[in-house]
Amino acid sequence: MEDVTVEDIPEKVDVIVSEWMGFYLLHEGMLDTVILARDRFLKPQGLIFPEAAAIYVTPCSVPSVYQYWENVQGVRMESFSRLLREQAYKKPITETIAASCLLAEPEVLTWIDLREVTHDNLDEINFRHVAVSNKIGAYEGICLWFTCTFPCPKGSNNFEPVTLSTEPDEPITHWKQTLIVLPNSMKVEVGHPICYDLVMKRSTESSRRYALELTMLDPEEVEHPEFCSCFMTKCILVNAMLEKYERGEGDGAE
Image 1 (spheres, rainbow, N blue to C red):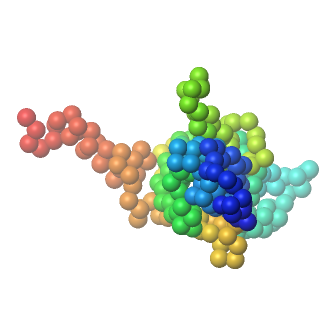
Image 2: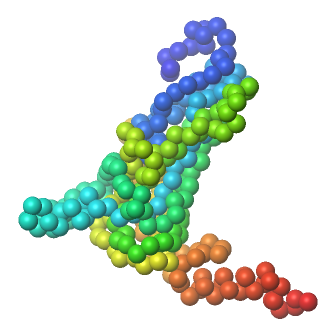
Image 3: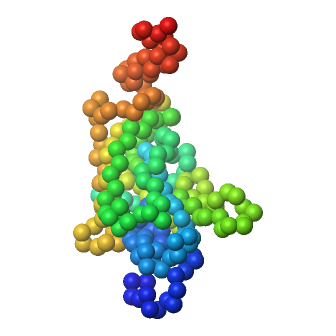
């Protein structure tokens, strides 16, 4: 598409269809080509398939890297498992993961409107999150997946947009899920706060690749969102005060 000139297409087009999605949505950098085609060839009211996309993220367990190597045909391979984790922490892995391995409610890392997104919007994506564990488990990594939404043409009897989802509890796709594996496992309880920064930055060596940088944060040093449901005392107290004021029981209430 980069080599096509305006003269090659006699008029603007009504629809652009492209399967540009890569692992964790942005790997391979093909969305840039869609943006180029949109800006040069799409009519003002034209449609883009898909028209929107979102990346989701949540903490998880990673049995394939941790539990599997504890006992392989009666042989304990903890040393190999440790080396594997070190490599996986440096370079994310792509595999399917069971929904039961997810430790918290997923959060939208970024949402992309294909009618509005620009090249610059895709150069770097920063995300800070305080996830709250909703089960007892082993925190061993961060799981990413994406969804894409397709528009409903005018006159269609289908009023609900069609969505392609690569989340763990949907049928398996070739995109699978992307896992950033931690070097060490950490046991978590229900209500445990899991805080981290995640940066997705376009590679300076290749525009088709991204570097994913995960930084674990101390829950004591990070500002938690309003109505945070974690078990830390400060959040319990803040929630109690907010609920009190909502009921009109705060100071000065009539």
